[in-house]
Length: 516
Ligand SMILES: O=C(O)C[C@H](O)C(=O)O
Ligand code: SF4
Image 1: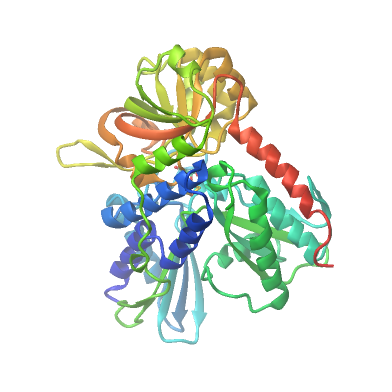
Image 2: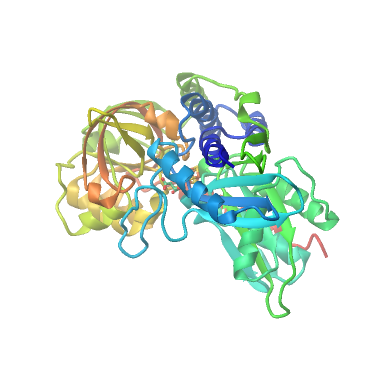
């Protein structure tokens, strides 16, 4: 087993940096369906570029490298304690090498352990099997899509869909609702794993297990196969689209599993995974620990179709009446911001500042360490590495879900004179009102495009609040050519509110029984 740790390290690096071939195929099919001269089309081409960049740079596809979750099958007699300790070492090494973000945080104090190790992280499930080899599978599922998981207890009443009973049709309604409620916030278009039955814990486990299936497989259970096909055909009629921008493709995959339940309970558990569907596996020789084969097709065999960023932006600006291309230099003035409208594609040059949960909470009752008048705040928790000269470099830096900052954002815009907030998934009514009152905009960046945005960051000018940990610190970043779309403007318009309303109206077409 002398190679076991090295093999697990290779598995982690591959999973984080090279999206598997079967996942790429599905994203390519979505690109075919979606009109490229739309916001959704632009997002998909950015995603395609990002996938290629991650592979070439051997760097994280998305800065949120998720909760590392291993499922290991071992022959009888294999020493699971040694494997566990070597998996932990491989995780720490991959973190040190910038292949994983420091993602393990003390739930009570917020302290980051700095190496992805801590109570409950990483997650490792062992199973014994009759075979001689060791099968190690890993999924890196990020926090934003994890927040969009949902569990239903049947029977229940679902908004837009009515009663969902304890039968296949009730399950169907839950799944349609699950896709609707995620909107674009889990970086749609997504993949869902569904677990029918079990208890609250095993139901979610079953749902997550489905995400280990091959994207092109067929469910051996005939009823579930029909259900999967139904969902794939109909969920895309909701019109949520990539990043929740509206569009033809909202869901890329649906896999359903079933297990027994207690007479009193009937759970339908849904695990929502973003497009950055990072899962891979290796079959290892149990004597040496060397890799015998990879379990899912390598991404390298399925290159993404690329379009230059300029061409993609121009196509949208040319074909969408409401979209203009605008370049802004920071600091931004109130007048500049008030001239922007939903649909505009904005390119930012100059300094921006990262800030997420810890910073927003802090700024509510403290001063900022720098002048934020006219500033751009970027909801982002990057992957950072320090070189030998002590200089910081950005390894991955896509946006995080903005809605978590909804309780604070309006107050902070007002208090510090911030003119633009960049994030993903949109924000709520309170922020929209603050944008209008104080003169600011919300810009939606493409979730998961962490390499694409890292390339726009030319220099790290400084950092404050390192005590919050790397993802939560306030990084001052010098950017050039950072492009995002205005989805909430200073005139009370919100693309997110519109798409949510439209998709809600569409949801009710799935009210009538299908499987009865
Ligand atoms: O934590 C992050 O950087 C992103 C997160 O996965 C999210 O989708 O909000
Ligand atoms: S930012 Fe988006 S792509 Fe990245 S982990 Fe979160 S949900 Fe997934």
